[in-house]
Image (tube, rainbow, N blue to C red; front, side, top):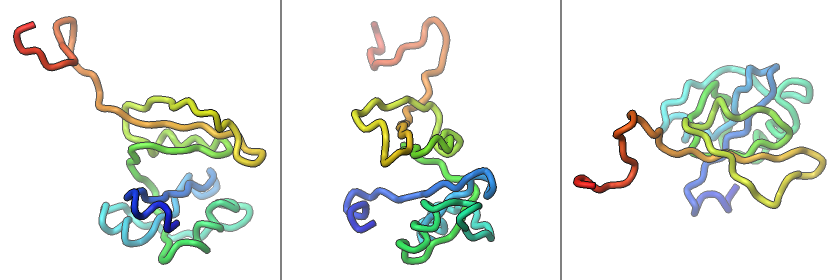
Length: 126
């Protein structure tokens, strides 16, 4: 966890559908970002081993129902897309598996809006 702090990266560990895909985060981040804290604790059959490990490693872990992340890494096909800001773009890396679990990655970018005459690079007279 310490390696993330200098990069200003905050870990959110999503659980399975048995916890409505809630996420474990540090209480401080949940409060700063105004995430709604929910009452549930992960177990082997609800939330899973990654959430249990996060609870054991974090200083003051809580579960939240939603976050809006700038990017994410999905380990084991838990469908993290609901927690990554729109518009989501797949990131291709050489890391396809972590252990025996399938791994995919997403990042986000601002929406491209407008119609035929819309431009996406600054050139007011072009």
